Image (cartoon, rainbow, N blue to C red; front, side, top):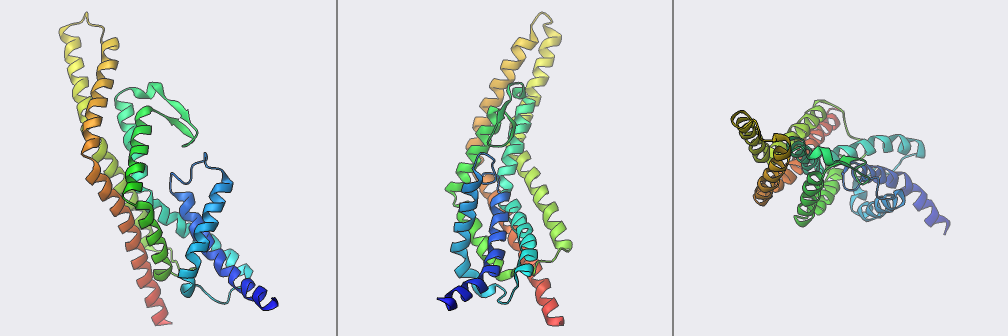
Length: 269
């Protein structure tokens, strides 16, 4: 029994590094980071995933660590997990931006209500886009792909080996650019249709001044937004799938670059 306790005590610092990286991923992905999910549930999810991942990644973990070194390393590993979650949640962040763009152009922001799931005011279109893309993400097994990337990250970049160089800055810029690009691709047809609707309403105001444009305009723009949005959503499957793949690919490319840097450093030393 004392020998088993000693082995457990030796594995505890390495397990803490795995726990911190998994926690960073969970706290960065939008649908897992929601304040509506109790902290106890999040902690249980992080612990369960860490216990499942630990045997598979144990060959890549440092074997001789003190608790002080592990505590310092856990901060860095949490940041690594956050970086991974940023790429995994790319398509969900784009869906939120898309919903806000369309809601603003269609004047549906006047009907905002506080959403405790996102901890901010949202509209109906925000909810439709976000949960629609989330269901698509789960249907395409994006969550399983995310776990696969997490497992591969320990092989490419072992704990306490992440370096903050130009590759990390390029990754963050690339994720932000891809997020806004995806949001514009999903919302573009609806926003363009609403701009044309505003132009038509402006012409009607000039030709028929007696028309109450305020009462007609709101319902007209909302109807047009919902119709075009429904058509757009039908053909957005490939765009969403490409966004999921792009986010995970960028995470993999980041770890490939960092792995090459770590390998060169090890070769020089």
